[in-house]
Amino acid sequence: EISGRVLEMAGAISRDYAGREILVIGVLKGAFVFMADLIRALSVPCQTDFIRAASYGAGTESSGTILITKDVELPVEGRDVLIVEDIVDSGLTLRYIIDALKLRNPRSIKVCAFLDKRKRRKIHFEADYVGFTMEDGFIVGYGLDFNEQYRFLPAVYVLDPAPACEKEENG
Image 1 (cartoon, rainbow, N blue to C red):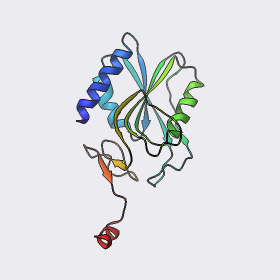
Image 2 (cartoon, helix red, strand yellow):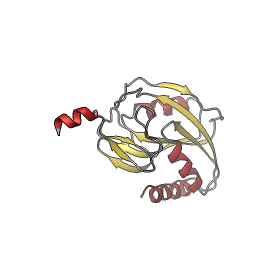
Image 3 (cartoon, rainbow, N blue to C red):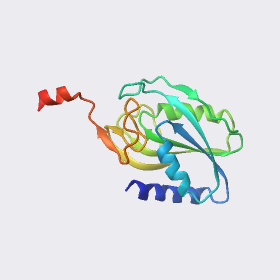
Image 4 (cartoon, rainbow, N blue to C red):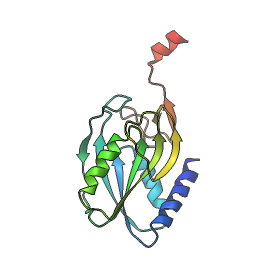
């Protein structure tokens, strides 16, 4: 199901950017698996770069404080930029990244998100390309993590963050 949806999204992106080269910027660390699959399925030329924005720490909810810990290295000015994100949650991180990249005068900026989790949205934000939509839940696998664990899982799972001893007590 994931690979089929990635192919559909790559087709839509390729049609939208036909005849142009895009700068694909992956948001580390969660988007790297999705981005690798996505760019291999594109039929338009692209360059790739990465940005790292941290807002979760070790918790399951965004702290609301965004830190850029790795910036884009390639020039953005005059380019068509596609930001690839693992998950849109509050919308705050992507808004922060977009606002920072707009200061560099790109030709255009669009967002491609693997997952769109709408329940925790703190600001209005709509990605241009969305793989899957869900209301709530903490997702791991396919590059998404909890405290740097579970990225390696080939599928997507909803994490139950309750400790095992708590589960046993509650049956």
